[in-house]
Length: 228
Image (cartoon, rainbow, N blue to C red; front, side, top):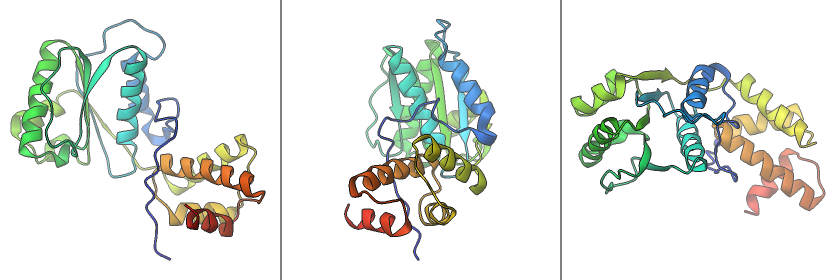
């Protein structure tokens, strides 16, 4: 059967607390300290942070979680991603700059990212960026590439199947949902490797099972997808 690649956003939005770190604990611990999620009033470090890793390693989840945490503190944030073809000018009201999928930036986006970076640094604002490859391998203009790599750099790893299985099992147990090994195998092998998408799939399955008064089985999953 063809593998599906669901792109389901988390209903409550990504958070640092909701990120299952596994081998990525150093990056999560660093970002927690950086945003001051314990209520610290200290200045967010202006030393840039760069996260890299393959698809489904959690890069965008962490960036969005950082943005959410900063917004909860009342800070506005500059957000530049590869889909933003006409980036705005740097805004001095921004408390930080977040740059996602930097490896895909066009020349226009690279120009904006460099401008944002320089302005953020001059105003002692933080920069957190993410890309698919390490800084040295980024296909970017040299002045931007070197700046992205001079601070904290973390290589994010995709969770293993056993780790994703354990997280799904724990989440299901906490909801009072019974997931058989057969259902877990189906979820892990037919859908996105992204844990956030799998967790949202679990939420949707739980709701659909309650609505239809049926247990979560492979036929129920197929029925839910057919009725979307």
